[in-house]
Amino acid sequence: SGFIKPHQLSADASDLGNINNEINGNWLSSSSNSIHEARLKAKAKRRLRKNSSRDSGRGDSLSDNGDAVRGTSAAPTSPKSKLLDRKSRLGKGRGLPKKGGAGGKGVWGRSGEVYEPEEVDVKDPNYDEAQENCVYETVVPPLEERDFEKTVTPIVQEYFEHGDTNEVAELLGELNLGPMRSGVPTLAVSLALEAKASHRELTSRLLADLCGPVLARSDVENAFDRLLRELPDLVLDTPGAPQLVGQFIARAVKDQILSKSYIEGYKGRVDCEHARAALDRAAVLLKMSMGGLRIDNLWGTGGGQRPVTQLIKEMNLLLKEYILSGDSKEAERCLRDLEVPHFYHEFVYEAIVMVLESKGEKTCKMILQLLKFLCESSIITVDQMRRGYERVYMDIAEINIDVPRAYFILEQFVDKSFSAGVIDEKLRDLCPCRGRKRFVSEGDGGRVKLESY
Image (cartoon, rainbow, N blue to C red; front, top):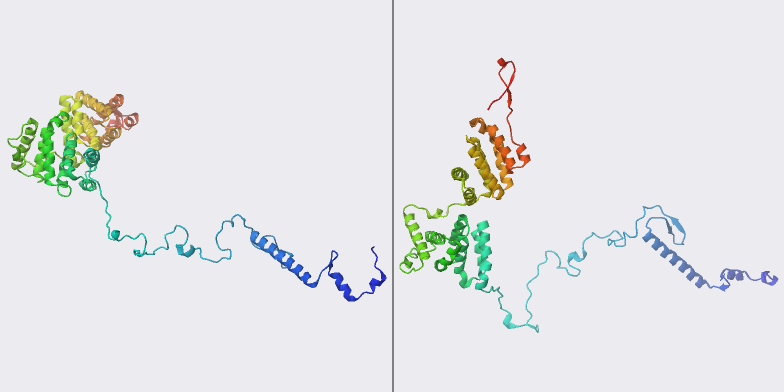
């Protein structure tokens, strides 16, 4: 039951040591006791490693005996931040990529590494002796006639914008023109007939620069032969085509891309009146060149290539002719032919100055009518119109020296321009005005009197 019998008290002392080995009624040997202690220590170490890695320096840790020890280290860090942290936990390493960047999937190897040419393996089952000395070249198929115009026309039209003959030569060199080389001058001249004078000058320069690198003299001759045959069709779109083609022929002879005997070879063999007119025009120009005419300036200098003084002179002549004729459409056509839309503010400036210098109401009314017409037809943009008026505002003090009534006339013209819709209210308010009242000499007693116009 729960009492100790008397014969049990007289047991040996060795028996008392065995009582310590009894746990929950089970007898344990000395070896099993040591295993139990090792298990406890291993379990304590696992708990220690787990806590130290998750809560480094925070809270409690375990000693070797499994006892809790209070730590006094740094603030805790989030376990999530170290989940994807690939740095060494021991603080070692320099942060460099593995194998110096030469390892890993899909890499090109270490930077700066030079690969030697790979030698052909004769024992390779795919080895073919016939392909050992093969040379591979890019072959461009010849340009067909149905694709010629669609391919070359954008090149010529872009040339009219940038004017770089070298770029055209490079683009044509990339094409395998073959027998279609003579079609390049034909197409360029056909497009220039419907364009401006400056574009015709660019076309003549293009033909001279292409002859040699891209075209031969025979190609140019064949091109002009074809143009002379197609003149009846070209006249339908461009009535002055015979004279223009004749000028192109004369310029080509002067640039030495056509032989001097080209025109003489057609004598007595021309039945078409348009071709005859073109050849006669070319012959007359070449004879005039012997007398001092410069065929180099046959088409004139168009656009912004002309000097500013020449443009100003032509604009003044245009305005004077308009005052005499009153034809707004003719003035618009002449202004377009100048090909300087970026310089139309000068035209507005000269027109307003002409109004300030005039003595009658006729000039003011006609100039206002012309500016309104050009503004409504969008020939002169709002920006160019504004710049022209602002230039007059800036120079009105100097203009007033020669024209004493310039301030008064300018105010009236600006008000009329605003009423006609040529300028806006903001530009009208910027108009400078001279004070109508002024102080007289001291002898007048400091009185103020109005200035009369």
